[in-house]
Image 1: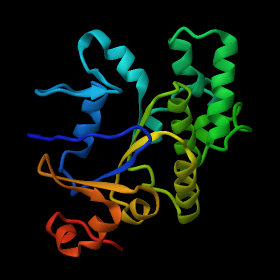
Image 2 (image 1 turned 135 degrees about the horizontal axis):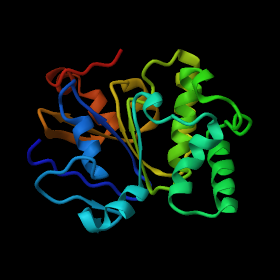
Image 3 (image 1 turned 90 degrees about the vertical axis):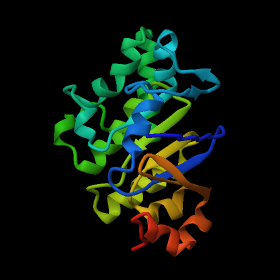
Image 4 (image 1 turned 120 degrees about the horizontal axis):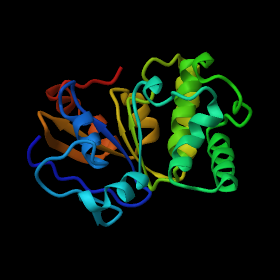
Length: 216
């Protein structure tokens, strides 16, 4: 990646699109310090440095494409409680955070369910809850609608639409982009090649084709 410059305002919901190998996942991993390179990254006004890495990671909730990469505890409740527990929160605060996070994703009755018995759509909701329990200021999602059937996909889009949080979503699902994300950034060969209102970006067929994208 070279020369990537990107800013988001509080509350913005932004799509990050581009062909495979464009650098979308690489950029997302840089945002919370899992990868490091040249240049400067600022999160919530703070520069991302070794000294404040923990603080920044608490503000950036990263949701991986495969929810099995995020769910490893025996029960849903324990998975969602894992982050707050390791922040040193009290038992009461952990319970409040888990209850709120599960309610936000419509999984409030699943606390004692076994994570590995859930459907892919349910797992993705729980993976989002594990991040929301950390009370981040920015939610970063990698291909959230992949491997979902039409009903689960629509339910997830509605869920993300209702969450009052800044959001950066890397995806190939341009119909989701159209329905959910007002701003779109096209990344190709490690560079930002377009950045603007989703309606304008998706309406430019030549631009989409030039960068390996097309609406279904």
